[in-house]
Length: 366
Image (cartoon, rainbow, N blue to C red):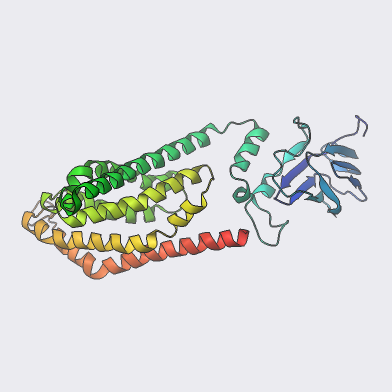
């Protein structure tokens, strides 16, 4: 190619098996395209960034493509090439040389959505974790500091809660191994302070989806965090007579085992990494533990009703300046009678759907 030949804007993207090139030329009639293993030659007359003119380029590819499988598509708006990789794998860049010409751009829409390249829409981020941010930073010159800081925060947040709940599990097991059933009575005294810190930290999970740090609705976090918070802060921490009950040991242990698996899973997901065993535990361990945890919570609520009636803690009696009454024991009874089983069903059904979605997606990918 002569150096004076004008170059059109070329937008490229990739999937695991294909490279796509979108050449930004309008009204192209008969382009001269030559695809070889490692080189692509293009020459055509069309309307580009310099108006009606002759445009051309040469791309020396990083890896080999299959020339025989090349698909060309000429439309009034552009010219598209679909190139099949000889070795299906991720290309760190398109060109053999590390330097990229100014007219070669990343087709971010194609990186995110591959409807035109595959029968089923696919997110390239699932194949190549963190790729989009790296390529976009390279393209725009941005280091994405806010995004990086967000990831660091989420990683440290999940790490802290993993360490906290792991501490609870280890202490409870060590005490039980040393003292047997006699250790159950002192479970709260041994790990209650750590459980207190972990629960206070977990209230941040309500804010994360609101500020866009995590996906989904804050309603799920409110249901789980506030539900456990009421049981812990209002029924156990506020009532010394409940703190010595054996059920507290089992409740703390089940809560903590669930979180010891959940938070490392989230730690890895922050950087789009995944471990097969950890993923399986995340979406399977809830099957035996959630019913046990709900039953322990129910027992704590039931055993606490006489205590909150006696102390009138968290209740508001008439007359008062607000002309408002609230009877906390009645609320606990209503929850046990009408909402306990539906809440357990809703939570387990949610996890079941998440499990189906996760493993069906993985089996499809395989």
